Length: 320
Image (cartoon, rainbow, N blue to C red):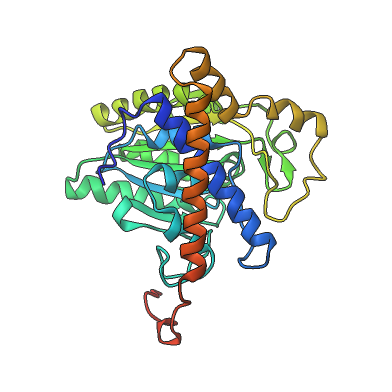
């Protein structure tokens, strides 16, 4: 598959966001049934994933975090293999050994999914340095949240990237919640993008619920990195609509805050825009909904029918 998707149409971006939403709702459903372990979803953050990843090229690399499903699907990951991984089946991307929180997919250029908060920040500099030293084309996109931005490794990573002129696109998905703690309890300002200024790094904050705005900002950031070889920090200001870790009743979330952000649901906003612009009609959107529903149901059947890994696989693909 050609993953150079910078020319992705608004309609296809909406469909990709809808697929991510349907996939993650199915994952939560499977977990609730007891057929899979708990998982962290990125429901509400789909515009950030699709907008950024669709601005990347084949030669670019991705490092992501525990809310990685959107990034993987936007990159072209097969939902059947992803669900198989979530359910611990041998047909998954990592042969059923990673669960939902550690998926890597070499063929997609997804180097890793890290559950260690900020773990991907510590490795992005190494991946980018390797590409630079080997003379390889492409940039490195590193996704992390506002919680990871509060870790010391965030500052270490940005500092090294500037000192060594590393081609890294730092993407802070500021979703307002750091596990069960609100961002306002740990940050004195609203935005992480301002923190890059101390290192002389270019940065920008964009509406993370507007997929077209994110896409345009990511294209601009990527072009800057490709031209200069220097890093860039893009903050997508968004909101996580589901709880931190399934199952999660979100009892700790202010109901009015949640309601306000539900009104900014990126899928609803894009649907309304495309309808208003006569790019899609209600029948077109209904057809997309049915298409992604059928795709996810087929993926779930594939995963459920797949075998568990053999015992002989226990110590394979393990590095220490």
